[in-house]
Length: 601
Image 1 (cartoon, rainbow, N blue to C red):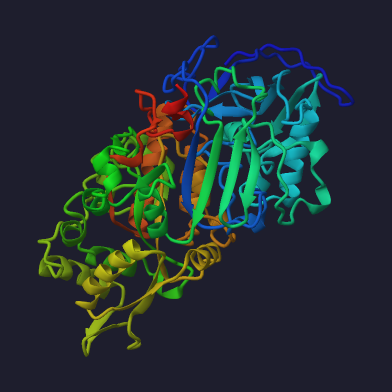
Image 2: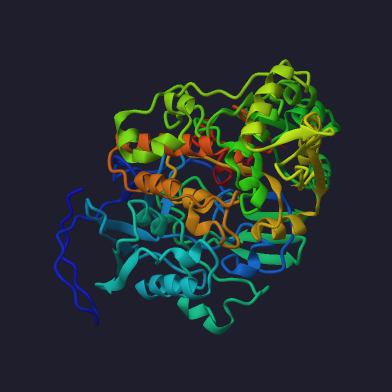
């Protein structure tokens, strides 16, 4: 990217930097939309705003500040929420969901960035305003990053880790100069995944305390009313500064948005059936087939909708907590993985609706499945090649297919071979280690669906004398114990995208293995895994990036940190017939902020 812009500073020393401001930045390659684009391709630019929608979520809240540690267990959805839209607070740039990883101008009208990504400069849109009419300034940007560094929660408090200097440039620009901790994704994370907060409306001293005071943001909505723990109502700001901005055309279409909170998913679903909630995301094929026979479906007031996104499968499975000594044995984790009878579960519980997951990036070119390691992978891996199983390295690895009986002797013998290598044997009907200690652990579950999976796994393991306990806890306790890693085995989902990056640090990096609130649920602390993530983050070409992700995939599969379960090829949503969506489905599937209320048309 050639850059040519003369930069000047106010109150700060600066050098002249050759630069050319651009309207968008991409992780790899070039943005798909030109500088004169009028809207994203997956919105309806002619939609009329009006009406309302009621979302439902499982959980509670006692705080309207989503950026502090005390908000992690009780989330106020909508304040900062890519699923429903960043209703109150906004980032500097807006991500397109029809490209792998590209950011377009929002609070920042244009940006300046060199080829080596040693810095990024955001030139703020002069029209950007807070909901009280005050202008969004460079001082607000600097204040936000410093405040979140000092008092914010992960990941917001880590955004400046890779920044050597943050300074105001000219009248309305901010430049971030990076240090050696930054990688090629760092500029995009600063651009699109950090909220900008109003300096004039925030008390720094009380920022890290819980509060139910209505916040001030630059986003399209303001908080209208709350019922603590139960309901938040947002109203559209008629004076929203960016309503005609290309990156916001076709979004934020309701006059009112409410988010209703429920203690259990069953309660949420019942409210949806009664029309109290307008949209319900379904993840259970059994429910999708069997549970949608209520009157509103028959009358057509509620419709079932499905799309096939063009994204990787992700990984969903039982996660071994390797902080526990028993699970630090890789061969044992492999044995426990082999025991799981997917065919029995798929037939008995899910009417054969699922596919077995074999890779963290299955169904995409980033997957190692079916692809032998290339020269790029081998060069990065070095001596770590010996730690990757040969069939995984060759791309031929597949988890065993059983006869679906739940006790396939062929597969159990295969698992037993790994138990023996791990130092275990069956004595007196129990699986015991070399000291005669029985192998026993507990699976923590969150709901009835997870409990069914755990009960099936318990049954499979019992055939080999492994004792498994199951503990189902409420959502608050589940969140608390998940964030403090207080479990033996847990069921978790690891979403994957076409542009994985620093999210992999949270999931798998040693720097996050003991960091409360991180997503490193397995407790992985492996220097080779760290190296492969680094290679992925610093890849310049699409080819190098693809090879780095595949190598990372192979290393995780060889580690047997997760018992891979299954995935669907579709997204399922049931919704009120008055809630409609654009004809085009973007790369990443459903995008609720682009939907609308038909009554307003």
